[in-house]
Image 1 (spheres, rainbow, N blue to C red):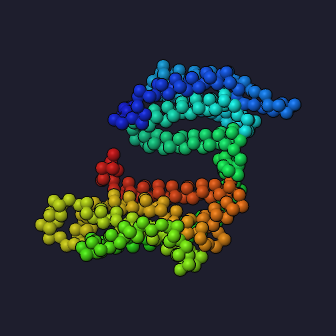
Image 2: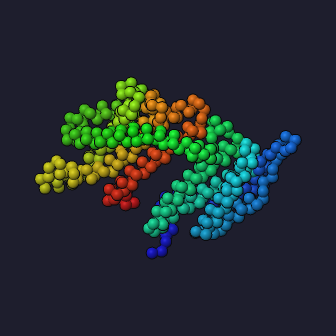
Image 3: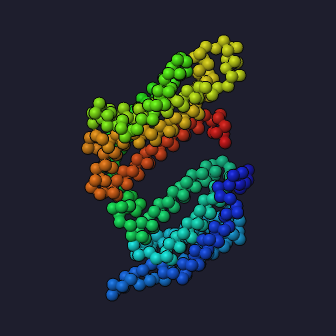
Length: 385
């Protein structure tokens, strides 16, 4: 079958905005020609303006104009090359302009970003066949994330932001590479010993209690209101109490995680059990199905989207709870311990490195649960869509 490029009903960016934003990128580039790219210190110690290279402006303008003139993949490729070649050259020159970037630098960066935005928008509107669509769906968030890191790097370095306030991604990446054994030990302590056991216990207990609540109407009237109130307890107040009760080891972190994720699992599962239609329930009654048969054959499958919503929400809540609990007491290892300790020492690059590892772990955990969800709930409209 041939590839298709039909735009969805709701485009990622209104059509009437797209071309004006490209012309805005061209305008930024033209203005950059008349303002300094950077201010470099001369031999006499006086900062001298550096003229914006005309070649960079030509690359950006040519790609922008060609993208308006040519539609389809050819225009997208020209737009991609124009934005990323310009941004790559700016990034290559960045070390020489640390803290000395001028208006020309920022205007060229803005123009490149506007064109890259157009690239992501056009790619998001395309619909391909088979594995090509899967690759495209992976490429779009990767490209978007790389641009966030690129903007972060250029803004911090170009503006001369002190690294103690906000280190650039390059420094954070270098610190991760230098501290892999330390970060791995922290990951084991927080995620493997705190998050995973607490996640299994909390979600399992929430599911079991949800079955009991569904079976016994009294529990539904009495337990759910109490659960809603308990779920509103501030974790910053619960965590030190759990540390006092269970000590500084993993047990206190597991307890905090269980408290955080138990009631989201309970509430979502109960709502999922109630999602089965009355006609389907009447049909099961005509078959003289028992409660267990109705639960396993009808209500549990219908509740799966709700259950997986709770599992995905809890995957991030569990990590947050374990890290916060480590702020109030932990062995000399753990992500929360590392963040609080190194922040006090002003080692912000290591703090950000730990945050990056935590974000990667949480995102991977969430992604694995979402993958399992698609395998199990393939019949649901959200999976088919």
